[in-house]
Image 1 (cartoon, rainbow, N blue to C red):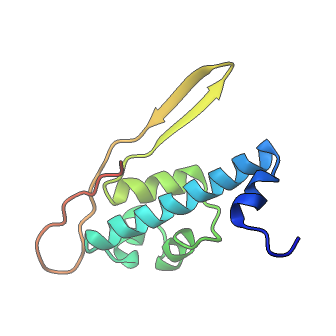
Image 2: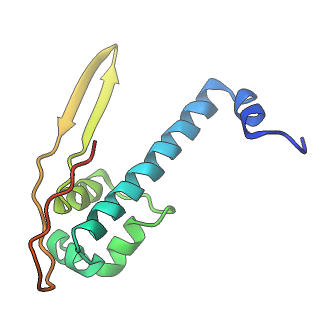
Length: 120
């Protein structure tokens, strides 16, 4: 229907569609946060790729909104910029958490050591 507001479109969605939209929004926010943390630390995609054992092109692809990385690749990226990712899988009301630890990466460029960013 033309001229619908975003809220009207969301209101017309099924609960499953709203959940998918919410998950996509969270995914985009997480990617934006990881990119911001990498840049704030002065770490290039090439530096990050070296630490993660992948090419700069792989990091670029991971940081694009069209990417669908494996959990391992995403955790490696996050750890390398000093971020912590917590994954919660809930089954029958019982949550099972997987948490990472942070390991800051250093830029190959001269200058002060970057401080690890924290993801809230």
